[in-house]
Image (cartoon, rainbow, N blue to C red):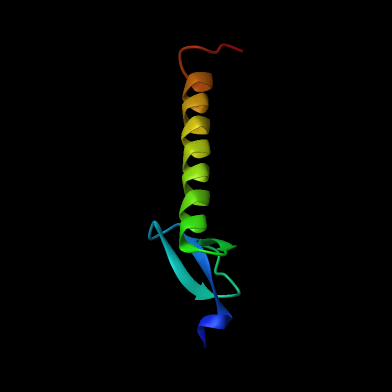
Length: 66
């Protein structure tokens, strides 16, 4: 496989950007044009997930009553 057959992905299990095959496996997020793009996209997802987790804690905990 040549470099032309690979694209950047963010490996969500390993927590790092990787150059990999065009067809991704399910633990990869991408493809992206560069390693930096993959890392930036993961930062956005991680920030969003943290906000969702905090909101869920609030809904399931002290601040929210049905």
